[in-house]
Image 1 (tube, rainbow, N blue to C red):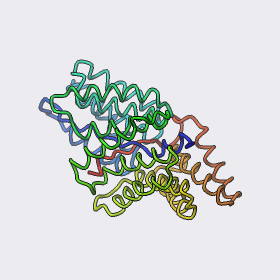
Image 2: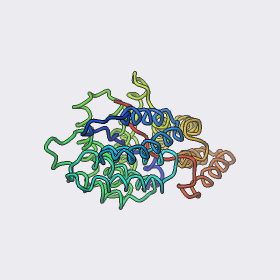
Image 3: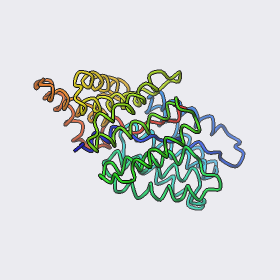
Length: 329
């Protein structure tokens, strides 16, 4: 049986809430929002948070439209989650939902905010809560006049991860194949965005003990990322490395497993900080591999560091979980 910690490392893809906002702006709100998003994608989380907080203050003074304000709250939530302030992220997401109460249930920003809240629940190992929100989101998205393919793909990927974590596997493959088809039809078979579905599918196969079968989709996902001409965010690469390590571990290829797992820890520490919750998950995986390889002292040291991180309240740590995959497009 695969530990939920391993599945959580696979990280479902996130869609950025970049929907159009009505009403002409007489200030520089949209450029400032874009600046904050770029800072977050550069792992400059505290600077991005300052931009978002200042933007919210000025928007409220200006009585700007609530849809744009909800978009800023959503970005603030993503940034808080990146920094590991899960309580702050949940507050921001809920503020965003409240601001959109008057919008149709299929409103694109509303669905994105709820999806990000569900992804927060996945990060906190609350798959039951995530599943409820994601199923609701899929229903709401289907009622849109023109359903957004990438929004549906993200909902499918996230719901698949929630189902894997809950060992509800009967519909998971169908969800991931549908998500993969949506991404390929939109961006093509070599899009980095496709890696999320492929890695999650590899995770499903590992959960089903189909270890050798998990290698091809995982290696395809890694090949796409490694050969992409786009700049892939370092936290996402670290997550991909950890998945590769665990796939190889379960397939009995310990040398490759150790190499990928070690690289995932090093990259995550460099980009997210040594006390980041995701670093704890990657260290947990690395310790497992080292222990299996008979390197007990190194395994014990890695496990000790992992436990110290994973045992602390997520809201007090220095990092977070989500990675904005919109930059992969």
